[in-house]
Image (cartoon, rainbow, N blue to C red; front, top):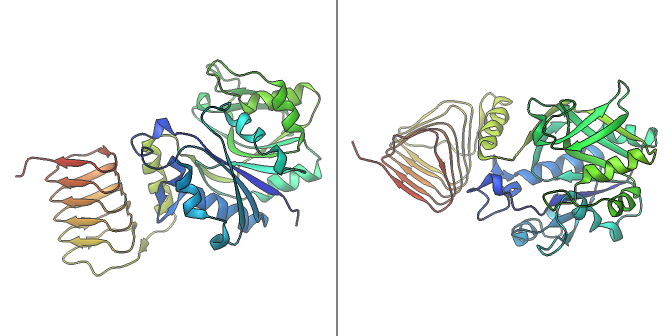
Length: 340
């Protein structure tokens, strides 16, 4: 087993995920009872044997620190590095902050990505081929949203470009990297982009131009970038599809029909309602006289006499007498329809 540290980038504001990132970082949004970032930490721990994590935090950082603390509950050791708002922005700037904690090759994982994939081939390739950078990539229908990669049939990368308007390929970086410490010197050589951020793609391109070896490994599995509220619905469908029945922590619901797959967290109260298919109800949700399908409802929300579908409802909301579909309701909101 090769022992490496994993740097988790978790400092971003998540403006595209508003209103659901107003009171929590977007990677702390729950999926079936656990925050998105926890799935990544557990997968990296279990597949690769990684026990040393460095989480770069920023926006609402105490939400992360208070939840994971030292990492003891996960059987790992977590250190925290803060990326302050007055410091340089961007992935490269965040990675540069951990330089004093790194002495050998290391993993970087973007916390707002949810994977079902095997990471071991990436690690094995990186060390067996003595690469300077190894990228986990996939083909994407909308590559302009991501860092785009140009590589040959052997996976040798000749170019990386950050969110190009006219992408030269549809091969994109998925948010999982392996670097040698040489990346820190490369970061020092790059200028900020037009947006004022320091892009890690520019540092990787510098390594390529200096004749370094950058390798792309194709993702074998599934990955969802949690960039927008609609991505919560995509994850909901994909996650529950992998279990035909979903998970129901309790099932003593009065006069209620459950249509799998669903996930129902503890302490939910459901009466005279229909739930499913493809519904996630997080902790303490109350549903009375309602029909919910293809939706995600966050903690402690109450839905009464409503029909909800294709919707994401934030935490501690009250939805009453609503016939609406396609709702995106932020935390602590109230919505009242016209009672029939």
